[in-house]
Length: 287
Image 1: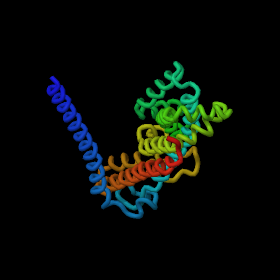
Image 2: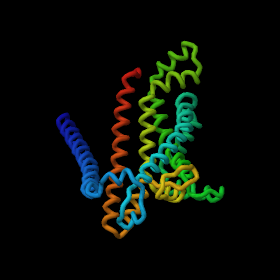
Image 3: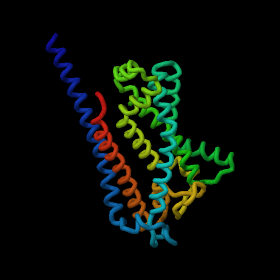
Image 4: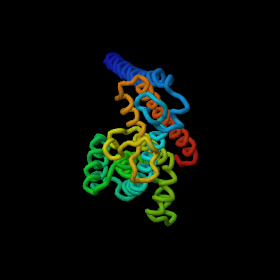
């Protein structure tokens, strides 16, 4: 019986290990295939004009120009949305993790955040478009920032709140024993302890925002110029890729892959930067 039980467990372990290896191969292979495809198709069209110039007359017909407007526009959109999301997400996450903890209200809020996280981004765009029409607003940088902030809000809140729950309770109890209030503990002890996690959550949300096209399709508009006001339409890299791929000109389609390469490089830099900052800041936390 013991040999049979051991043999069965060994088979189960081998099956699980095989599935894990296959999952890794599929994920790594998919990522490698995407990167190789973008590099092969995008590098020939990449040049200095692509990142230093805005579209000139006839750009979408294969003539001169670049996508500087889309690069700056994406940074404006994602950066502004991330700042707004931080202002709401950080206090809410601290309140959930420090005050409410596992109460019924906390579970309701977490459920709401999970539902918001799972809603397709095109729904956020449609919702923002409806509100924009009701308020008499036009497609603009401000409208895009607001919709992207709403998209980032549940992602950032749940990510930060999970980090709050990982803070050692003994550390909080020690703070209370020294006479600190809950607010002081949350701001001065918990926040410092979870700083690497906060940075990771912020960059994760930023990366989601800068690569999203559906949510800003209706509300941010598109422009060949860099906006100088919050009320002007703005271009973004995902939409630039979409519009360029939709043309019948091979030169412009090649530029779409170059634009995708730039967007991918930005996302990769964010991912590596997140890991580097987390490791660097993690040296000063108490485990």
